[in-house]
Structure formats: structure tokens, C-alpha cells
Image (cartoon, rainbow over all chains, first blue to last red; front, top):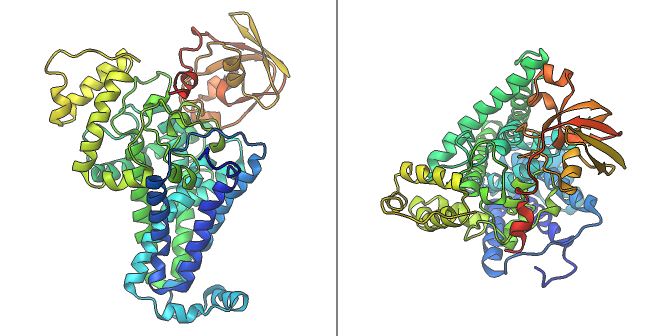
Length: 400
Length: 105
């Protein structure tokens, strides 16, 4: 991307534009309902395959412009949901949206909806589910890290509630970042762990962990767990608002489409967690370093996910806003961009073939002596012959 | 610009406006204990005996009520808003500066 000077601000217009294009596609109905999904696949997988790695380190004088792009993503996410909810409906004009669009753009959404069938609504769920990751959880991740700003945390939690995951704001900041790459982190995948099993395990354990953390805080302050000052029930109520919104717009059809999108979007988020720290180890209490994340410098993933891909630096200095993250070319690196890696992880044999050599390389080149011992134990427990064999003969111990 | 006095080492560091105590310490090359930098692990816990800070997170996620009353703070989540005095056991500096180690690849 260093070859394209002058794009350092404009590049973040790309994900915003993708959101807008997706919303227009939803309003067209029919097969266009797949638009949000397909544009994500084409831009991210295509861009990552065709363009060089982005190792640029631009300086930004106007961070607020980047924040404007970030917050726009969230606002457009809500618009996208409302358009899809409307399209799921069976007659009527919920909130007068159809009339509004007709008067503004001359487009007949009623006719578009009449041509929209079950397969198209499946596409809508797939689209919204993917957009929940890019425009929902990813934006929320950045915002809920900014614990100093009540506005950022509130907007972030409303975005997380779209995938019934408001408690991510608690678990992620107050547990994941402290415990990453240790067995105490639900969001770190173990060596040899099947990604689909991880999706379930991580979802359940993160939720339980969030309850535990919030309960401890409330107990200290003498507040009841089931009260309005408790963030857990508030998070559940926020998600209920979205379900009610879909029900109001489109009855049970709307609820079903939304539920599908929630399950798909939440699964995709867990796949992101899976690829970000798969198999990495750290002694509990040791400083978190760049080697405790799988990094990626693939350009399209980086832009669409607001540098979440610069994950090594994010964990090493989690107090930085996304535009200050550096590429860390020397960190452990995924072979593909994020979306491609997710699809590889969905096929466990392919994932193992890709990552087992990378774990071996990590053990020999990145692990500290203490981490090497943890890695040996993890390899033995992995059930993967290639990793277990590593320690049956004398090996040369790597150094950091 | 404020000053933070670190006991028992006797070091004094400058803290810029808008900077956390931990950021200032690391910028000065001081081996201030830390790990997660987001106010969750408690590694940078230290005791404030004088001065004022502005916490950037709800520290009751990490510190007990007793600790908060005794003046304990999290350096990574403390904006310094006056000259302050802190009690903290420092470590050997800069082993953890991964940024420079990895930036060049």
C-alpha cells in the first residue's frame, strides 16, 4: 500500500462504501440480498490475494476522521438491519421506510420485496451475519477498548448486542487481554482443537467468564447481579430490543432471519478468535508480547477490519487506537488474510496442514525457554502426530 | 507536564498531559511492571501516596475496595493530573519492549 500515497485516509472509506453498497443491494431485494455477503468475499479475499502486504506506517494528524469512519460503520450497520427487517416483512410499510425510499430515490421497495423469496432471505442472513463481524463486532472491539469514553463503550455494546454478545465488552477487555495464550483464556484455541468445537466452547466459556467478572465487580460495590446497574442483564435487554425490532417489522420470519444472522455472525467472530491465537502459549503473568498473536498484513483484511489484523501489536500495546498499530513484519504471521484463514479453519484438515509447521516454527524461533516447555506439553496434548513426534527424539531448544 | 516520584527507587519522571503513568514510565525507560496495558491483569498495580490521577477504567474490575481505599491504582489506567508520589517495586527495564525487537522483521 506504500505504492499508493494519499490513500491513508481514503482507504477507510472502502469498508464504509461496502456498507452503503450492501444496503442498496438489500433494498433491491431478490438475489441482491446476497450482495452484502458477496461484496465482502470478493473485496476481502480478492484484495488479499491480488495486492501486496501492507507494511505502511502512516502518521495521522486527524484521528477524528478515522473515528468518523469507524462510527459510520456502526450507524450503517443499524440501517442495514432495518432495511433487511423491512424486506423480511409480509406487506405493510414498517416505519414508512418504503415510502421514504420511494420519495427520495424513486425506488419501489414494495415491488422489490414481492420478488424476494426464502433463498434470498437466506442470503440476507448470510450478508448481515458477515457484516456483523466487520461493521458490528469489529467496530465494537475498537470502541469497547476505549474504556475512558462512556460514549465509545455504549455504542460498542449496542453493536455487540446485535450478535447477543454485549458481554464481550467485559470478557474481552478484563479477561482475554490479561490471559491470552494461557488455558485461562476461553478465546485462545488449543493446539489440535477443532474450530467448530472451539466455536461452541469459546462462546459458552466467554459468556460464563463475563458473568463471573461482572459479579465480582458488583459484589465489591454492593450491587445486586440482577439489577439495572449490572451490565449483564442490560446486555441481554439490548439484544432483546433487536429481536423486538425484527418482530415488529416482519413477525416470526424476521426473527428467524435475524436469529440466523446472529448465529452466523457469532460463529464468524469465534473463527476470528480461533485464527488469532491458535495454539500459542504464554506463562500466566508474563508480559503479553507480539509473539502471542498470529499477525496478518494482508491489505484488504487490514482495511476492512480497521487494522484488527495487526493483532500482534494490538495485544502488545492494547491501549493504542487502530491507526497507530504497526505491521510488525517479524511477528508470527498467518499465511492468508483473515477471511481466507477463516474458510481454511472451517476445514480442519486443511487448517492443520497449514498451521502445524507454523507452530513448530513458533516453538523453535519465538518461544522463551519457559514457553518452550509449555509448548512441549501442548504438543503432547494436541493429539497431532506431527507435533507429538517433535519431542520423541532430542530436539534443539529455541530461544526468543 | 507533571512529575511522578517513584519510591523506593527515588526516581522522578516527567509525565506529559494526556499520558498515563505507565506510558510515561516506559517512555523514560523505567522498568515499570506491566502486562496487558488495558487495566485487567493488575501487574502495574501500585500505591499512590500523594497527588491526583484520573482513572480511565472502572478499576473495581481488578482492585478490591480495600485496595482502592488504601490508594492503590493501575498505572496503565491512570492519567496523571498533578505531581504525584507512587510506591512501586521496579523491575529490570526494557526486556518487554517487543516493538523495537520486531518492527524491523
